[in-house]
Image (cartoon, rainbow over all chains, first blue to last red; front, side):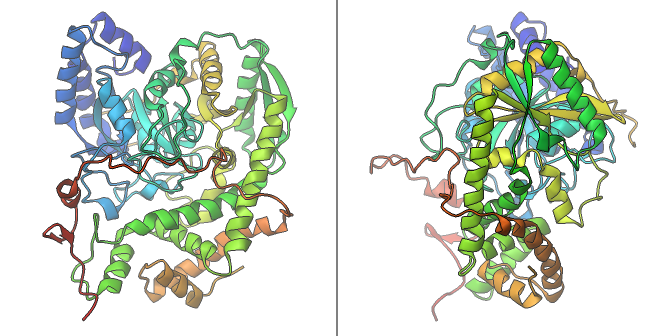
Length: 488
Length: 95
């Protein structure tokens, strides 16, 4: 049952073929055996999971079940969970027991989903490899010496390793789509404002967006129906009805116009990835989609614009970690200044400090116009670029990543090299559009992701397209072999 | 664009992040390479382009000025490093 999709598990629970308690116990056992090899979790909550599973089975027996009642999930350790440590992968929050639940967590609790624990991530979601976590790197279940991508690398690895059939993630510049691609799973970053950010620890507030990660697009649809909502507690939440995504997956994709940006297939792309993506596009074409070449001429400027805007917002957001109200505090501060300086020196890791410093510089007197304002102007130009392309086509398709997952440590000393890996995902966050990655093949035994980008609030179109593709392919059903004997 | 360790020291003070000489040296290098990356923006003509702050061009939603949340001081202070009588404690600021 652990190698089944979330959709299949939901059906099995509904038919009474398995109970939530049995399913949850089986996951806990598997995690106990294999987690030391993968390090997908920061905190496991087996006791809470078993209690939730029992409650879910009782609820189902009363005839009051939702599709996700009793489904074991894992939550990225960026979502506040009441009574459970919420660390965001940082020493700064190592002692932080959240006093309240994020809206996303509340919504999964309300339908009776089970939480197995909190998954690993790059510290404060700043990274593309899950190596900057205070709790050590997560390893890619497909090849344990490779990174799982990031920042939602723990979530992606957990699904690939069959530690959970679904997980929550967040995406500020590719943090759902890139690890989904690297671990051979599906993940969608919804339109900015679709999923509440309340209780989701902030990195770049105008870019951050939560979303589901799972094996199939059908699974994503079931999860997104629950996650998406209007939330008065999030001032950027959008008040629009949430479609019943899982009911719309059988729509035909005949006549759907798909654009391939020539800039996404140019220099820097591993040709073996290009081949896999082109093959997937061919499949969509045989299913009736119309394929067109398009252009997104400002693609190369998305990373520079992002590395002003995101750090600027991060430096502002992370000013709250001051050793006063919660989180780490240095020992024996001699005065308030010393308290701030040493608390933040000790509590933050290298990459987080780097981004705070860049953001502080970009926002400081005399540099604001040259950097921050300029980047925001570029941001509008990039948004306009997409708007023009989405006049011509319904969906944009391309690779999710330029390269295969790299070996652990290979890019840790070179931040810019790491940043450039997000070439195809980052612009989507600047524009606020929905983007998804679905498995579309393997190169040297490592998964490759197809990225699909849609228009604002057109998540249904992406999920349907992905689902129709997954009816014609089985890349998303491939499983890595993890042996209980350990080692690589 | 490069940042000397002296400049990094100033920025680190603005950000209230302590840093020793070795750290300043390392940040000077990595921040300079990041600035080289972002300086590509300077070549683009953005004259007359309205800056974009929210991807949906949304403005801040306001709510009625009414008390909506219960007092949760004890719960919220339960995770504080130091409190007394409902107050957060910090080192003495005024002698």
